[in-house]
Image 1 (cartoon, rainbow, N blue to C red):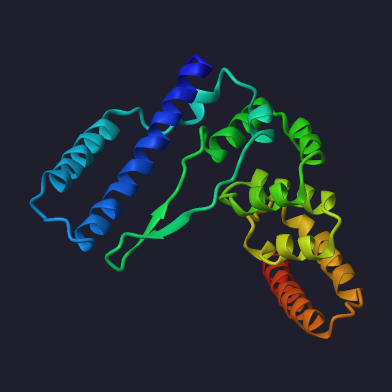
Image 2 (cartoon, helix red, strand yellow):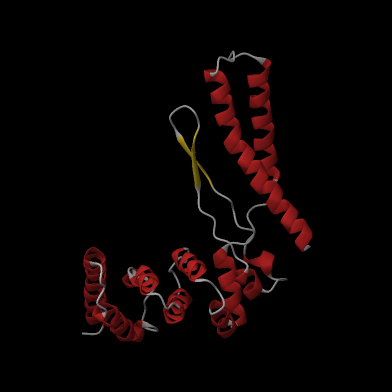
Length: 229
């Protein structure tokens, strides 16, 4: 599919979703401002909302792995932007969540890298990314395949800031582990020991870090010993 058309479809989808999130809030604010419930304005809002809902139903489904076949998945990953949900009130005491769908699903891109066996190139790309991007990337991994764990291991070797490493590793026991990569756990445990050996000058932060790391080390040790008696 032509990239320009794909981008246009994505823009339409995002804008439609934003309007669908906005209209109920607008209607509620107008109602509480004194606008009659049967007024033409509120009825028009309901009409537009219904038309947009129908329009949204006609849009193509979210792009899957087949959609990015014609593009370089490494380049798309390098440009990948992780968006955070936006929370706002609908004026009636309810909180609505507004999220922007990415042009390509992250997992679809990773599957393309796996199919093309381009992990060396992907891992090299990691070295040019910011620590914030790397941590966001790790947080969005599904942890359902060994290449997810491979990505996290490489990221742990790229990050240099101690707090970033703790953020990355604190849930390492929940990464995807099986008999093909379980042998990596002892090296990971040594990395945790190295982090524990650092004397953090801030007493409170030292206690927090020590609690996180000792708990992680204990869980990794138990998991490894259970699988390797």
